[in-house]
Length: 480
Ligand code: BG6
Image (cartoon, rainbow, N blue to C red):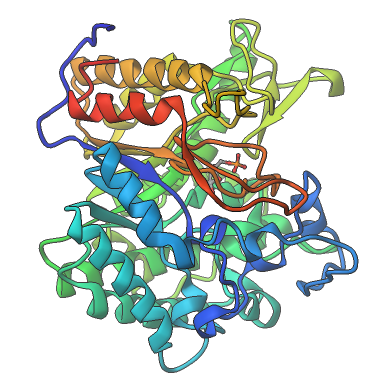
């Protein structure tokens, strides 16, 4: 048993996190429409294929496989999975609603009853075990129709479609859902607009203008979601969600430190500055000027952004980033959609993501110092290859070590004075990896018999970490 610096609060929200597109499957069931994840081929090249010029967002089964279509079939097996979450003692379960189950094309006028009924069944099942859902409204699941015919969030009309979607789910699930998150990893669009902002940069396109105009629309949508939440469900809480990766300077040179600071401002803080403080930060004006960005801001937009600030900050934490202003190609390393240089003090996962529990303590302190709103770690975990032993067990001690160190870092941050609501580890059950479309990149406490070649029975199996996490929750983080 290892000591924690500070006991977790009594009402700490322990649980796990998933996203609809990576686990539900049933991609055509219940009148669901196509979303971005449905046209994502399997394999490490998936994100570059999706961004390649001329990619038409059509499914081409001759050329590619599509692991998200069946995923792990949560659509039909949710009862079994939720029972396993309950066995681990989850207090909360973070999941997302697929926009295309509710509005198959995104611009439909009426919601799809079959889609709404599916999430009713899921929420009712969770309620049976007193597990509170934490619902992400949009987790990399934009309807393909909005991508193809509107250019995603570049088009202001999408704000209206999103508002219609939000109204429909709030009115239906008020009383069933108390915790909401607006856009998953909203800041990831800065590097990689397709998943979050719904467009790929075309050859002659001004990427800066397009990206920030799309962001402006998404900020309006986020504020609308917050305001509607307060009107329709005053007892609920709503947060934003960012990918947070503290940026370290490679060395003590002032140039590298300045560069790290700028990366921090733009990547880690820009979106939360808008969503939590309710206004565009002053440093962005220089960036806009230097990149010739002129936002189309309508009357009332800035007031809306001011009024629609979130209650808490949800964030994913997997790794830190180390930066150098000038780097050579062989110094560069990438992981989790980010790039930097290798940090000589850190080891990395099999996918090159540098493992840094202290970085989580730094992240929590930086965010709390800046905003003084409650924080919620809504993703954290280790993607690893798992092996079934001859006796049928899965001895994933590497995952336990990873999580133990990160949970200890959270307890240090609590002792530092940070206000932390909860922790939902990513991929509490194995599912399709977002960035590589692999099943073999596993995060779960629950193993799913499904493989990269599409084979597998989908049978669920408890890993060693399942029993470990159950004890962590039972002892409220005391027994690590
Ligand atoms: C986060 C995403 O970036 O990281 C998840 O919100 C994703 O959707 C997770 O699955 C882990 O990334 P990956 O690429 O290993 O699945």
